[in-house]
Image 1 (tube, rainbow, N blue to C red):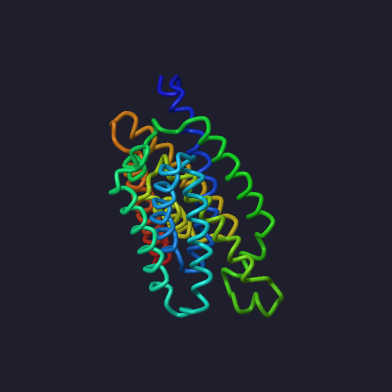
Image 2: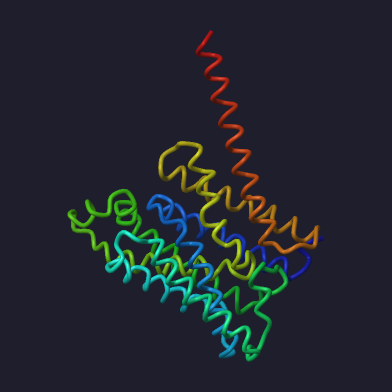
Length: 273
């Protein structure tokens, strides 16, 4: 019954795109110990959305452009604040949140920006789906082409430089990929809990203690599971999908941790015998 509605079909299509792209970006961010950048970028996207609404253009496109600029700015500022990533993120947050609040409070927006805070399965239209599909395809293709270089940089950036990897260029490209992941997720997940979709499925997959590729595939699986349960839950409970998806992601992580601990206890008991 649920999938007889066009808006649910649209939402499910976007959910698959989110589930594919967010963990692919998130795993590199977690390995680089920079998962908080995802949170900053998600808040930066709000300024892009408000600028899109102000100029009467596609808010997802507005979010992508502004977030990509903020991502590039983070990489640029790293040269000046190399050991103070938290300070760089505070600067970007101040810029983006200041822009968003100023525009929202001005009363000049041509649509309500509140829906982007929590996400909604009702608001995804055909134009959004085309934008999201294009961003996802381009991002996955770029990730595939830069896979080895990104992996090298994630584990040891200085060694990658010595080996001749164009670290600065790839970091700027990765910032644009982060912007794409954030932009495709906004309408369903919402700005406030978007970082959960980037980091939590990866956190769950890391507990399995497998190789990189297995961890990546498992994180995509956990992400897809959280999105599907979140969409079903938000539809039947009539709540915002963002919050429910976030709660589901936390619940999956807790289940994985409990199963891991149970297995550890069983192994210890077997070993003691």
